[in-house]
Image (cartoon, rainbow over all chains, first blue to last red; front, top):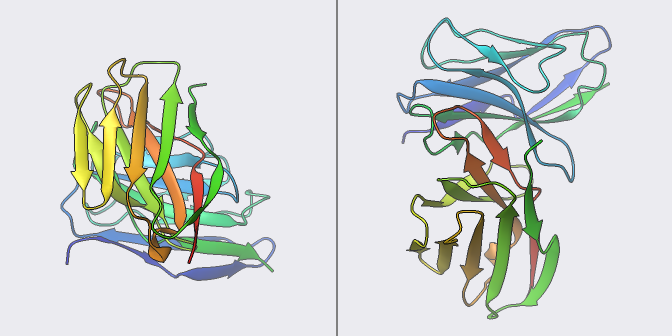
Length: 112
Length: 111
């Protein structure tokens, strides 16, 4: 089945540690996105990528980094500079701009 | 910034009842999307609307793209317990990669 796979489902970060969230899609979509979801709030865009080897900052990029070395993969690193990382992280993809957005099942990141 | 207002914020209904929720914007958008999110899971696309006035169904779900292009409605007929979850509307800025999401309507179905 085509879809978006996020791993791990749950992740714990120690203070000062960088952690990486994985996102893989087999939909052959050009665009990929990372969103952050906090309880009771809407989705906020962290980074997005239109094509391989290119990515753009979203509304809340500080403390995060991404790479897009392959079309299928768009990992997100939560760095130690992100002081409030506890949230539910969602990866998404779309064929191109202006298209329907499809989501993975999410990663819950918590701080130890 | 741009916002989508969803109402109601939450609702409790009896199993078998019909449900209606809506989403409004102060700006015109050409594409409206409706998603459902279960606890601890990612949103799942329910219905996509591309044309003002368009009425689209997906099983017991029916959504309409408002004629003014500033609103959309989602109706669920004969609700069942598995309809529980959060329903989000979303719009797309034409020609961009920017999506705006509503804050959601939390639906709880009482058996």
